[in-house]
Length: 228
Image 1 (cartoon, rainbow, N blue to C red):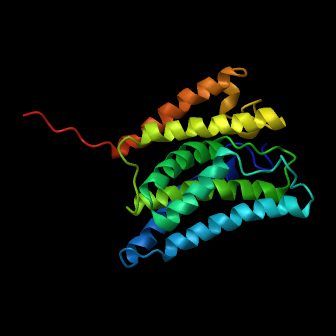
Image 2 (cartoon, rainbow, N blue to C red; image 1 turned 90 degrees about the vertical axis):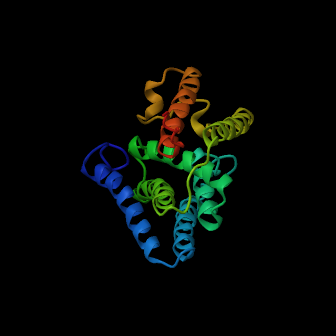
Image 3 (cartoon, one colour; image 1 turned 45 degrees about the horizontal axis):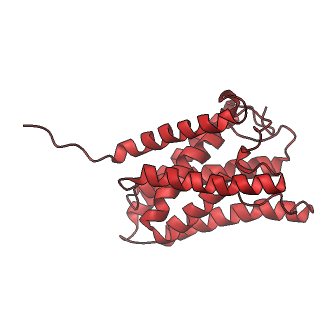
């Protein structure tokens, strides 16, 4: 059981299924709007921002928003705000990072959620809302043909991921935190559970990221000219 939700139980599966359905619905609405209309994108960005704000407001109200804990340094935190910026301006360089971070990172968090069994119901709902909205927003931008990853984006995304991990790793070392699970695995069962002990699971996760990013780019890979 993960925070009142059974892993791959009916509720969990329903949440997973709802994400692409929401993305498809948003894309369908976008196609009915005037070309270049940004009202829906702004609305989705606002919902994402409010969802993230609700998370930190919860800890602030309970007196638990203290340094160096509860900082927005997790990969999905960064992905969320990259998606928000991509929704607002559709800049290809921002979308490239949001695409891989959102689909590879947040989708894994949806499939193997890091939600302790003792987690309050609000935090459980907020966790799935945050990660589900990240994935849905990225799919919406792709399916409505407003954005797509560019050639070479896999390498650039991997470079930025490693640079960010190095920064977070330094922060973890100095302040004895565990952002991005660089110092220890999560207590709940996640993908990292099967990737070996520390620090080898970090190297294994690097390989998984390369594979996932490459697979995510496949639908957009330019077709090779057919030989005559």
